[in-house]
Image (cartoon, rainbow, N blue to C red; front, side, top):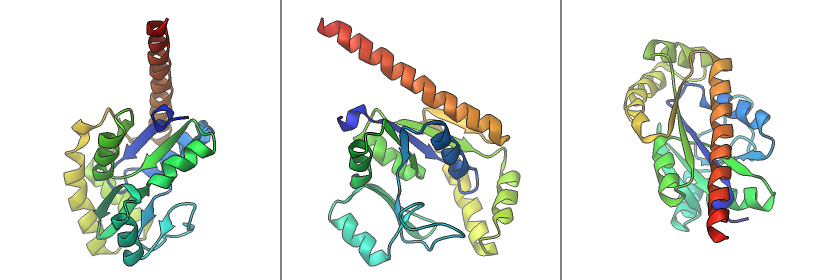
Length: 203
């Protein structure tokens, strides 16, 4: 299987809009997809586990990997580095998975799309900034200054929505999850049509 044969689903959103929860719903619905585990220099939160939720590394290790060209994309977000290793793409292919779901910010989405144009991009929006602030405070993991920075950055991130193929407003989790699952199914149908057309041209 070539990398171009992998179904790549990029999910982005402002912090607190629900992309992690929606990503998990999609993975439950599609066992033949796998989660792209990013590298990050931030500390684990709550029950997060190294090698499952993220590869947690220090800044020196991240910069070493970056300088060696190990990342398909990387960005600085909220004062920490995040990056997707090229090995994640190879892992999905080696495991025989049909595709890969990325939980990355819009900077990473643009970098992946530039290298792999067949990737599908989905942006998750909160109903409004008031609800986003409520969700951020409800997590109980950030201090006041961090929440303020996240809200400020959210405004800039929301302005990037036009880059994405699809936008989902997460005002009701079950409906938003159904929308995301529907997008993945629709993209599979689209790829199937493209494959059939290519096959017909070769006859």
